[in-house]
Length: 104
Image 1 (cartoon, helix red, strand yellow):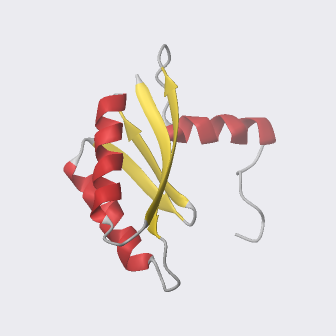
Image 2 (image 1 turned 60 degrees about the horizontal axis):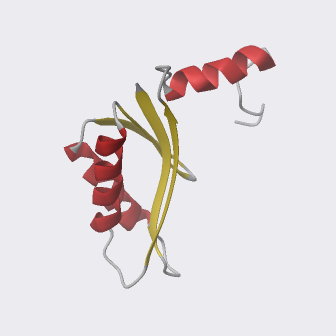
């Protein structure tokens, strides 16, 4: 089984959040997860939900601030083992091209 999630952790501040986001992403290194950060969040893959939740909690706690906003969206396919990359490939197969604009 593979659990795939979109995680976004950020302090609620006016200035740049890059340093705090880096702290959150760095916290994932202590867990048995694969991840890829993009402009809107970090996609995380784990073998089970417990590991994913632990990693997400560590990322949340790694951000120091008076107010921290965390968004976690989980796709837990319990009977099929599908990676994040395979999900993108399925969309690209339907499109017949890469799932990005020509401007990228």
